[in-house]
Image (tube, rainbow, N blue to C red; front, side, top):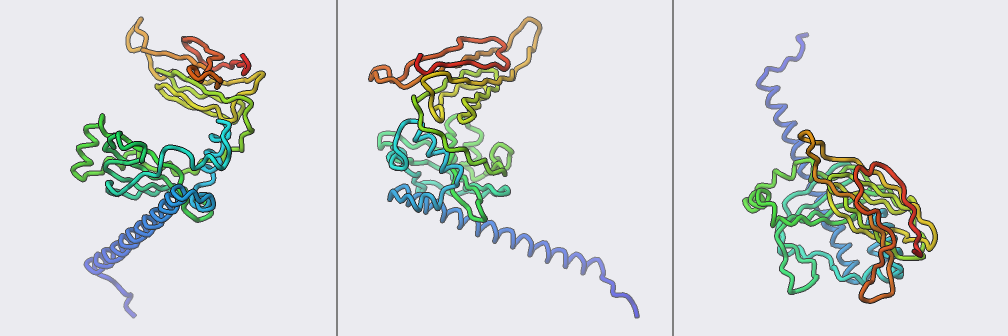
Length: 297
C-alpha cells in the first residue's frame, strides 16, 4: 500500500486555512473581551453615579477597593460614605473613540482617543488625549482597576499619529498593560494625624517607605502624596532609598540634581492647612538613609 503524500500546493492551502481559522478565533476572542470590559466599566460607572456600594464592590478590583478605602480613612473621612462624595465623576466617553483593546495576561485596558469629560466643571475645557481604562482578572472575572489620561497637548508626534488614525505607537512597551496583578494592600489603621510627603527627586529614582504601609516612588520628578495610615503623634520612622540617574558627561561637570524630603501634617489653621514638621533640606548624593519624624513636632 502506497503511503499517503501531499503535494506542496495542498499543504500550503491547508496551512492558509488553519492560520485563517486561528486568526478569526483570536479576533472573536478579543471582541468578546472588549464587550466584557465595556460591560464591567458600565457597571462601575452606574455604581458611582447611583452610589451603589454593592455594585461598586462587584465591579471593582480588590486591590483598588482596599487602596481607595485606605486613602479615605487616611484623611480621617468616613468609610464607605465618603466613597461617592468626590468631585470627579466617571468619564463621559460619548465624545471619545475606542481605538484598541490591549490584553496582557490577567491585565487589560481599553484605549480611547478624543476629548475626555470628567465632569469637573463646565468652565474647564476638556483636553484632547488618550484615556486608558484598566482592568484586572480576579477569579476568572474581569474587574475595573483604574483609569489614566494622557494629555496630548505637549506630545505633537503622538497627537498627529492619533488624529490620522495611526495608533501603532500603542505597541511600544510604555503603553502595554503590566501583565502582573498588584498585591492587595493591608488595611491601614485609623490615623492619629493626617500626614503628607513632598519628595523632590530631580536626577534620582527615590523610594520612600513609611511604616511598611505607605510606599512612594518618584523618578526624576516632584511627588506630593498622602501618607497612608497617617502619622503617629510620637515617633515615625521613614526609610529612603535613592539611586542617581545621571552620570557625569565631562570632567568637573555635575548633572543637574536636586533632592529633599518634606513632611507635613494637617493643621486646624484655615490659611495654612498643612504644617511643615520635618525637612531634610537639599541633600547631595543622598544614598539610602532613615529619618525620624515626630508627628507632634
